[in-house]
Length: 272
Image (cartoon, rainbow, N blue to C red; front, side, top):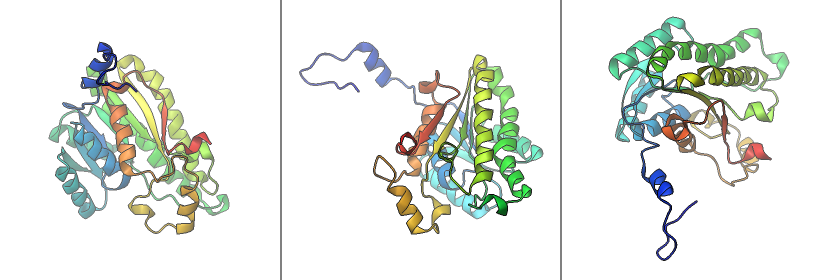
């Protein structure tokens, strides 16, 4: 890190230019964050909006919760729209992309965040229907959403696709095979897509959060929370804005030479 000291050497012009430019601004961009009426999705939508993007907040079922999230989004000084739709349905995806384009403009930044319930069970207690639901959210949906936004991104030779993964694939968390299998598949999808789309000016990356307590963790056992918290090297819980900052970086010009990467936002847990 460079500092401009009162009596020290002058800061290098290149460094000053980099620090004072607009590399992290998303002004003029349109972002869609799937499953963004709650939790980390909502935090990323707000972060992208505060960076200047117009953001479509997507939800499917809970309209009241989505309206509350959108009110918070607007109160944070952001501009965007609420867009309802099923991200696991081909017709639903088409409707989401068309409605976003109608209200805000063609999508430049796609954040693949939508998720479903994630119960921990021994392998014997899962059935294939549940495995299929995981594949629908974490492989089918990213495929459908990506395919739907590519025409505009390829036309303008610029785009950002950000998958939301998880540290659990790296850690091999037990009693979680359905989620791990689907997230592992999404990881392979984003890596292959990155090399395929790189010549088109489109980057494809993945954010892998740790356990960051949000609304759906309210009833998790305290002993489990305490055990996980004790493992975090930076000695604090992650907060949703940590993931929001990572999303802004990967959506911005500052990351234009970064693609096919997985960014772990977990306080260094997967280093140990």
